[in-house]
Image (cartoon, rainbow, N blue to C red; front, side, top):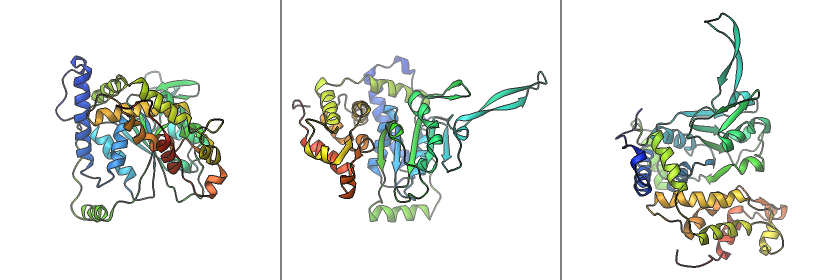
Length: 343
């Protein structure tokens, strides 16, 4: 499948033109996803923000909320190679990364070791029910998610850009699962919860999926465009006050002297510096998707929950009182004071 209306030489476009094209591309991708996804507007917006920011996402929701369909449809709209890995208790690291195999060389007649790439060698990787596999296999994703490469038998193999991991978790079925370690959770740009749709949307879903076959997804953005858009996102200027606000918001989540009283009571550990980086980079992508050339305090606030909810470790008291990380983040945002107004 090829992209519709190939773009001009991207190297000839300035940043303002690329930013305009990114904004338009977001609308085209959303329109394609609307062919098969009904509702879930916030989820689609966050997924596109992560896409252009170049980050990984953790999707949390009960079965039947179209998590797999969303990611597979997005890869089709982007004309990218898609791979789905079903994580199970018996999955081995080599089942993810690939392994060396002995093969006959038809030219020499001798046997030699050849690397057989695993399903991680794709552009969009869906790690389905990632918490159903032991930590040893979960860790096989760590290097790929952070370094965009894998190491097998002492040899390193680069992954073709762009590369994204979209992992899913079922929040209600915990038997036989292995909670993700904090180090791996920290590699996800966003944690995105998927909730049941409103009644009217659910009726529309039932009608759409029990009548005619769904419309085919058309590739509307090329691989080269995605890479160019990711670069222009990083070049978006951010005011020092906005960066300071993001850092102060993250630092306020860490227990200790000077932290808010509710933080010391309900949080054992706060967010890492990666959270401030994610707020800033995600804010840049969000701004361009909305047709703006600057990052605002509102962008930081809007991304606070998806960026921080999986990076906060609650105390036993918070768990016993059923105080959620979302509630704590909302309180942090409510108490935060931007360094100055006007943005």
